Image 1 (cartoon, helix red, strand yellow):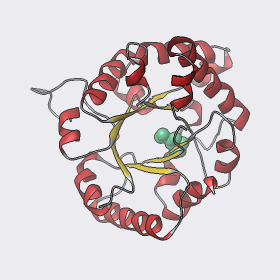
Image 2: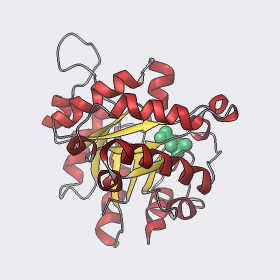
Image 3: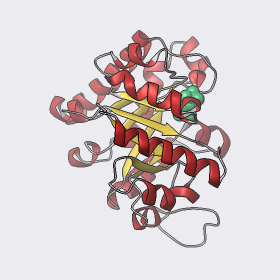
Length: 252
Ligand code: PEP
């Protein structure tokens, strides 16, 4: 059975004091409530060690928001897979649309990063998704196919099973616009069928595919109810404990 997951991407938000506060609130919530999904957070990497110290029993997965495509060396500002593994990070988000938009990241970069992450035992959350123009011109299925193939299809079946995929239509990220549950389901099923065609249905059925793009407490349940939607990657609503936990509760 594939995992149900709610993952919070904090982006470049919260100073150290605020970050610790939110981590403690989430830790308390997790300890005091029965929860029916895995919970991950991706705080700024600077706070990963703190997060690991707060979530002592590993009850919350702790992810980086990105990682380097290089192994080590003269790459100022970069953080390697080995460094993340050495502080016991759970994994890294790879290929977020903001990395693509502002830092020129491509699916070839993602492919190298995913492989490096897996080699160090990290879970990659690989993000893809079409722009508004691509959707309007009916290219979304093809765009997703290309992204998925370039970023992931050099992996072995054993490797790809360890990847979490996040479908995040660019037009829905931070905009308040959400893909309808039907639109999300349609693309998730498409991604799963691409994986099934290459690796077999059994492998495809093991991979969690998350939806990301303005998931909020009031729409999470309906989106997560779709058969190929295994949870969400949450931006804005991950920054307030009430909203994030309400989204976690969508799996009750
Ligand atoms: C994201 O950045 O991954 C995201 C889904 O953001 P938001 O929920 O704010 O749209």
